[in-house]
Length: 239
Ligand code: IPE
Ligand code: IPE
Ligand code: MG
Image 1 (cartoon, rainbow, N blue to C red):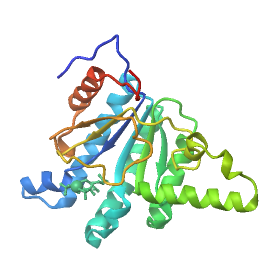
Image 2 (image 1 turned 120 degrees about the horizontal axis):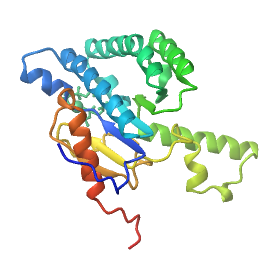
Image 3 (image 1 turned 135 degrees about the vertical axis):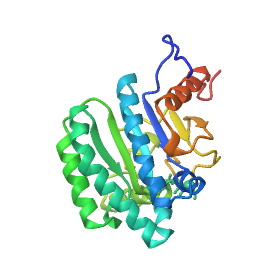
Image 4 (image 1 turned 60 degrees about the horizontal axis):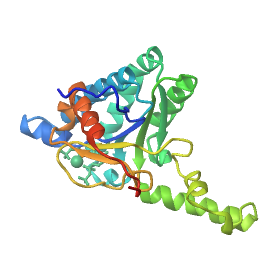
């Protein structure tokens, strides 16, 4: 495991594209859902590591707007695992002072999941340690279009002047309003793409791609990714 540099900052916000559950299962002759189930343990480890390291925000890409295209049985299995995770882990979110938030088109989720999410969000709303943001039925292009629609409505109603719109005001219309942009984006399973995740927000994120499949991702892999982040020189277009 890499060693973190105490003189360098820990990313305030880490976003993770949790990929490779299916390949993990296939390599073991297991069903894809077993891979997704195994991935829940990785989520738990990441939460603990982020809490210990003082990361303030962790955004996890759990289900994309495009993942609805998957076979119904897999979608049902994923929603079942989400329900199980919330039921089992909400007490530990409370114990660990973690606040839960979600981003995405939640209305597309089964009602049971929506209800459970609302309950866990309300229960953890006052926690002020790590904020865990789960992207569910999330697509960044939809998010940007939703923002544009709301802005157009407000312009029509005369409550906003198009001439006053800038990147800062626009970002307040995104699902992530109020959350600082990710500093570090991690994608597991060696895929070099963004898959419609936080397109606006990752403009200046440092990207770390690891070959590790999500169900194998452990505390040490997260530390390795942060160490790599600490070796980067962020310039934000300056010198
Ligand atoms: C990520 O693992 C989980 C979701 C997208 C829900 P995958 O299911 O995409 O796993 P691979 O990419 O097929 O291995
Ligand atoms: C991205 O993974 C979505 C999540 C991790 C939830 P996918 O496996 O769906 O992405 P593609 O299809 O490989 O781009
Ligand atoms: Mg995948």
